[in-house]
Image (cartoon, rainbow, N blue to C red; front, side):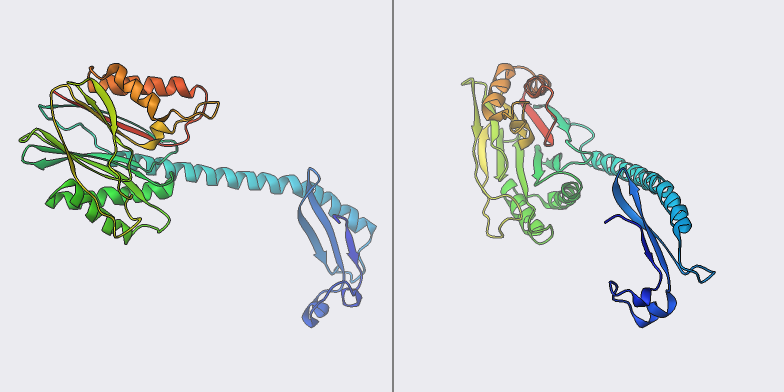
Length: 329
């Protein structure tokens, strides 16, 4: 009831189910509530006056004064601890962000036939989005885009694992579909059962002037055909990684021609929300790319970014955003 309590003889008070040891050690009790802004945050209790006398009204008044002062002191101490803990967490998240950003490619691969531009923006300090470039030999450039389910620290940890596994697999690269198969087996045995990874793997083969690609539950590949002036989304359906060990992945080919444009991205692009809770969606994304598809890859990325920011307005970013545009030269 948040009221003071005085007990002259604890052993005789039937309200308390005390032990024999407690009855021997504790005779009299004085308790007062510790409040802060009318909210109970603790109890201050003293037992057994050294004079062996019961507690009186003067004792109650003194303890009540101490309790009244203690409320703010305790809250100040809690706030100080919370501030220190927040600073520690911020420091660790900053370190994690720096480490994670160091895992993303520091430079774009030098390829005479490719014009590549990228964009990455995390919704939190750390992200589950990942992209990378690989020199696969024999005039082949590999590009991967992946998205770990959820976002934040757990997704970032899985993303780090994904990069490590890919780095190991690429040493004996066979094909994009084989890579996804191996990733699926390894991640299925490693990451939590309630998590999964979507991934798109592109291989630009300049000896044969074709793009070979495979998809594991990721967003469709956006393709602008310079000859037909057609901009479309290419569906290639297969389960995300780690969902099923029976998943089968296939590899498709697209002939490469000068001026063709490919864009891979995470769902943070198409699922960007504005202040009215509307999504950017694929239709707006296609239109934004189509408007500058004949320009350089960097122009495409900047134009989509501009359209995204205009669409969002003052709405906050709800998911990680990553994009790569590849123009055939």
